[in-house]
Image (cartoon, rainbow, N blue to C red; front, side):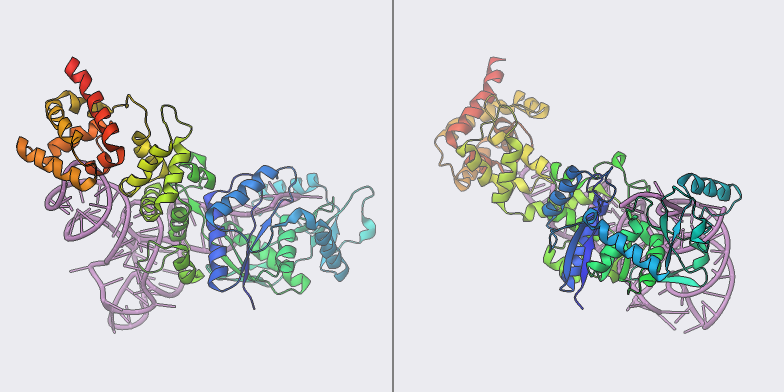
Amino acid sequence: MTVRTRFAPSPTGLLHIGGARTALFNFLFARHHGGRFLLRIEDTDRARSTAEATSVILEGLAWLGLEPDEPPLYQSTRAARHAAVAQAMLEAGTAYRCYCTPAELQAMRERALAQGRPPRYDGSWRDRDPAEAPPGIAPAIRLKAPREGETVVSDLVQGEVRVANAELDDLILLRSDATPTYLHAVVVDDHDMAITHVIRGDDHLTNTFRQVQIYRAMGWEPPAFAHIPLIHGADGTKLSKRHGAVSVLEFREQGYLPEALCNYLLRLGWGHGDAEILDRAEAIALFDLTGVGRAASRMDYAKLTHLNAVWLRRAEDARLTEEVRRRLAPLPHLRLDAAAMARIASLMPGLKERARTLEELADSASFLAHTLPLPMEEKARALLAGPAAGLLARLAPLLAGAAFTPEALAAVLHDFAAAEGRKLGEIAQPLRAALTGRLVSPGIDAVLAALGREESLLRLRAALVPVAAG
RNA sequence: GUCCCGUUCGUCUAGAGGCCCAGGACACCAGCCUUUCACGUUGGGAACACGGGUUCGAAUCCCGUACGGGACGCCA
């Protein structure tokens, strides 16, 4: 039997990282077992579903490299099939028409709650003669669920979970307007799509009992279930916007790499020995449901950022250069011409070691494309205002005559430091300040070489002018 | 309220009766390296929720308690 999994989001909002992780686990599980990963858009709630939300989900999945193996199935296109199955259950006697109005049900719930009983449908139409049906009321179709015994779910993550059938009431399959409820539509679709493993958030665990009852009523074999724990915010409560970024596209915006986010999400709630850094191929090879924990895990942005730094260092320079260009393009006072891009590309090895996100990377590369005057960090300005200025003034002519290769420049700086009786850092730091406007950058010889003689001397003199004048 | 699930360093986790006076990673602190920063590297502090059992032996099995989460809709 070929493994078939699915991710089934409802397009009512963003693709948040909880959903992304669910998709990732489904994808990885399918790939690990040589199966297929499918996507179903649960858009039966027409009022809340939007095309925008659907495209956000598709875009997020594509960015994460979690594209489905078949075109997505839109649940709303399957209403006729859902109704037909409910009808078949009606005829088979495993379902019945219920004429209670929403108001009556509401009152029923409130009464039960007031008496300290669980709020459940009392089954009043279960065995009632349909001839007693009140006129003018369209019935809903309810499952005639077993009242005795228990329903058992053998969950691949949670283990064997059971509940007494007496705890469950007769759920609605088809609303009075003939549209399917979520519980019913999911079962019919998973069955028709030949889904073998349903991997989803454990907020669905208790729904599963009722879904299993539907499978049983139809004589269908239920798929295997795996309910994975939810992701919480740093404070342990349900993840929401106030915890920081939650939308997948938001992470992209902030400069996170998809492979880093996937790596992080994989390790959140799943472990395999001491393995921490995993690429897609390794994840597919190692992932299995047995490694999934049962407790909710908290979102840790610091760890995500660290993983992002790791993946940033591993990323191709050309790709990062393009990402930097895209992020720098809208900014003022930058000239992203071929020369500037060549500088950025040549310094990328040193740049990417010092950044944790694409945002930081772009920021740290901006000096290479900046038009003069160069913006100065306060500390850089202070350094240039000190005695270092004299050193740089004496250094300038030496640089003017030097070959602009990192090796030759390093030699010039070393010799100069020796001649001045200074430590190299005492030369390099002010020079860095003059050339970059900052105190942190790739190696100073590499920076000089990347900028080239003309630009380097231009920046050096520009930095010294105010000092000389003051 | 009822039902279901969970609980190992601050966080993510390893651990499936002796290998654990509990290992790794992030974060934190200190040293080294370094041309600053970062990387790297070395070291440090830091946890089996609590109480009972079972066993020669329990983080691991059982039962309670506490705390947390989830579900109880003609929402998904």
